[in-house]
Every structure is written in structure tokens, then in C-alpha cells.
Image 1 (cartoon, one colour):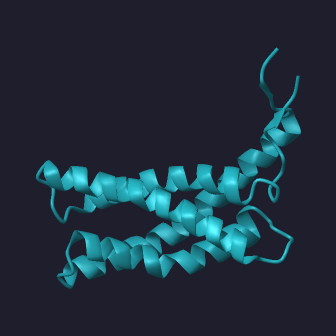
Image 2: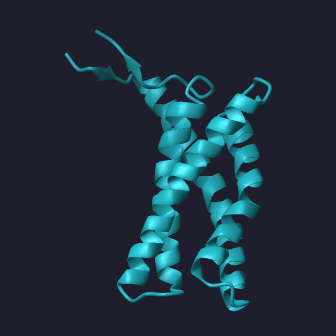
Length: 146
């Protein structure tokens, strides 16, 4: 007997949430990446440019993910926003690790390294927000059964 069983409807609901997350992420990534590239062109350097893109994209992402991706019907709370911020910080740390690795390999101020870092951030951020912040607000697709 499997520890995790997912029925067809729950799987469809979860895949729909992932699809919405990806769409929001793509919009937010385009905005953030454009900001990062503009900041690099302005001479800010890797870390300040990256941070600028993420800081400016954060409130947009939170609002869209909360309302559309995870379809939260409850009122936003300080606890929820704090958990979201902690998930962001964790995923952003992974993002910075990719940038640091790229720089150590000789790829400073490289657009592809920035893009790879954003992809790692996005995947990790979905998992963290889905499992920690919005676990009861999206379809309950992963349920433990005996």
C-alpha cells in the first residue's frame, strides 16, 4: 500500500494549481528579469541587480499566488505573509547559491546564470509555499492514507 495516494480529481486540481503558479511565475519572472537586466546595464552588479528584481517582484507575486494560484478565500494574516516571506528567503538563498557558483566558475554578470538561478528559485518556491503557506488553501491533493 502506498504512503501517498492521489486520486484523479486531486491530481487534476494540483496540476491546475501548478499551471497557475507557472503562469504567475512567468509573468513575475519577465518583470523581475527585465528589472535585473536593467540594473545590470546600470552597473549595479550581480547581487544588487538580482536583489532589486526580487524585491520589486515580491508583492506582485504574493498577491497573485495567494488569490489566483492557491485561490485563498481567507483574509491574509501576518503569519501567512511571514511564512511566505520565509519561503521566499529560503528560495532566494538557493538562487544566490547558483549565482555564487556561476561567479566562481568565471561567469560574472551573466544573463544565463541569472536565468538558471531564477529557475531554481521558482521550483523551490512552489514546493515551499504549497507545502507550508497555502497547504490548506489549494485543493488537498496529497493526502496520507493507510
